Image 1 (cartoon, rainbow, N blue to C red):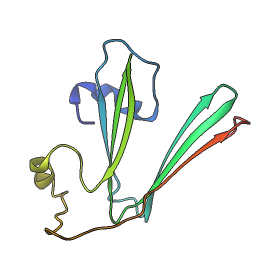
Image 2: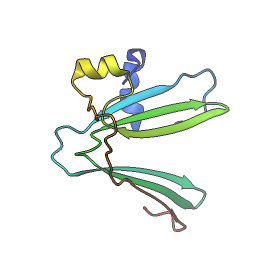
Image 3: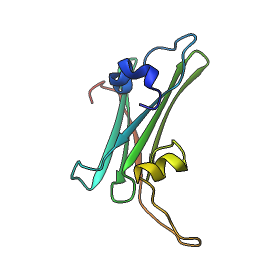
Image 4: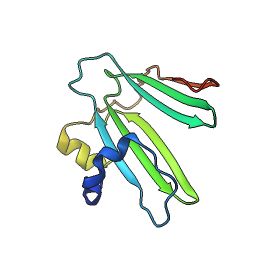
Length: 126
């Protein structure tokens, strides 16, 4: 978790609360270095009335082995951001210090596939 003052809420990354008054953002860092899989799979599910809305994101771990999850559960500022990347969003100095940065030469390109899918299941079952 980016902000150590929320260390007691580290397990809160799995859920989204109702909008809260006077809250701060929470940023969670997920690293996939040692899971031994080719792809990361991120899923979100939300009950909407009698239905279930879901989102699935899949990306290659050889290209993107970090995920930054940003939550702002505030009234009038209710946002969730999911950002796969090659390092965390804590700045270049931190990335160099961790050894988590991948440098791409000037003029070079890097391509990868990211799958993003949405579904609405009217039966309410996942």
